[in-house]
Length: 243
Image (cartoon, rainbow, N blue to C red):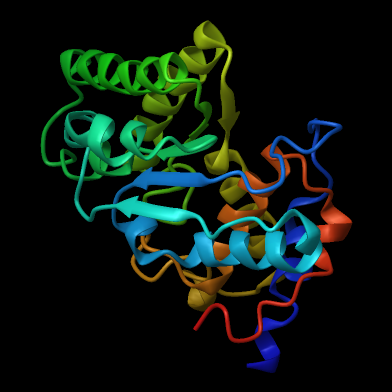
């Protein structure tokens, strides 16, 4: 377990300081967070890391554990269909919406279709609007990577979907967490440190699903968006949290 204690420090050394970050915490004592997503969310690694930071660094705030409503294999069209039941009806203070990887990954056997991107954009924006109409603060979380190579065809297509999410966040004035950019930064740092490609796959098991370091990196991006300072993140132990 000891090697996991320094995961946050390892990740922070790879990505450097945030370019911008809220000056104040974006949550209040007792606020419930719900996490909407696919299999990466369902696996829950990054959510457990977030829980660890909130519990260890803000014990007086008595933050409940993040409610995980991720379902493997889902795309935006699946998530929007259950958003009212799985998110809005729970009346959380904050929702994180992690969406997009399956919308691209599961369709890589077909050419890019602008109509698919258009439908994706409408579905994601619908989720954001549903949450905001219910008074729920939204953090729209970009997909991470498909293959740990910036120039892969899948990542090039993925960036079209990330750009759409960024525009949705701008239009609706909600939070946006660019995990893709953080992953590319970490991958670039890693590739400069290793002499061979034998270390490929240090963040993910298969180019998509997370290893402990990938979960830690996801948690850092979301925690920063919630206003948690890096020094608080780094001071948190993940021993026994990420297996």
